Length: 341
View 1 (spheres, rainbow, N blue to C red):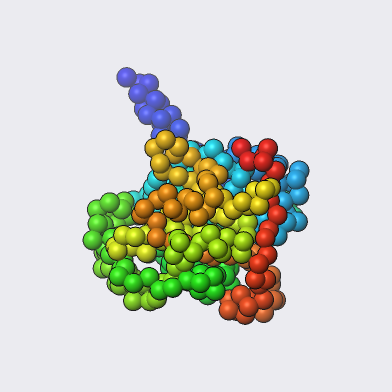
View 2 (spheres, rainbow, N blue to C red; view 1 turned 45 degrees about the vertical axis):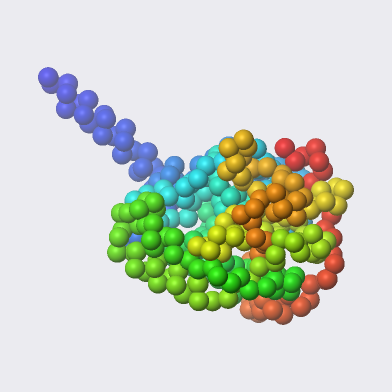
């Protein structure tokens, strides 16, 4: 009986010490009311991260334009298993997170873009916190997570608008022939809040999401109908973020991936697919063929990523930057076919 207190103490220490050392290394992430989540929760896939860093340094990804860098990272992730709800990591605390072991369509494109930006921000000695910082800038309204679920950008059309306002992407949809989406509105999160872990445990957020979805629905959303996509494919570049517009009236978009042009000049849809036969990151077919093969796809929205503004540089104006873009530039392949995975 005298040994029982010692056994209990050992058990408690085995649980507490890993979290303590996470905090000591500065590897936890702050959330609501100063709460933190351990690094093991907010960052998964350190061996994959190390592999990507080594590959980037060996092949000189840092010197590439942002679109080429983004596509190169995406290609290096081909074969990664698909998993939904990878961002739902806690009942209350929202924090920037990365899962390189499993990903869905949204986390695939944002990890590819975040890693590409990270390479330009530093010359080397990259760590998980560097990528988490890039993810925070991209994923959260105004580029800052306040520890609440509401600060995250949950809708692609809202993500484009917020990131374009901050000079982080160029919304090319209207310039490429986009037309307004009519008969669509957002209400899914507000009406089906039981499906979302954070909303189930924080019901006070539900009215805020209902109001947000009404606000987004009241703003014009443009898309390029899929019948016109083949004609504008030559104007798309490696790393362009391709958001799939939905035919379902209860949303505007339903899927997302990256543009990737192969060595033969064909533009593919590079994405994490939930289709049961694949369920992994894949190099899909020609973008226009992909759209035609999916009846629920109405067309696309296109956002061209930019590197982060450098300190001291003037604020970017998305419209001005868009006017300077060449009309028919065709990017070279981001990677030889043998490196596609």
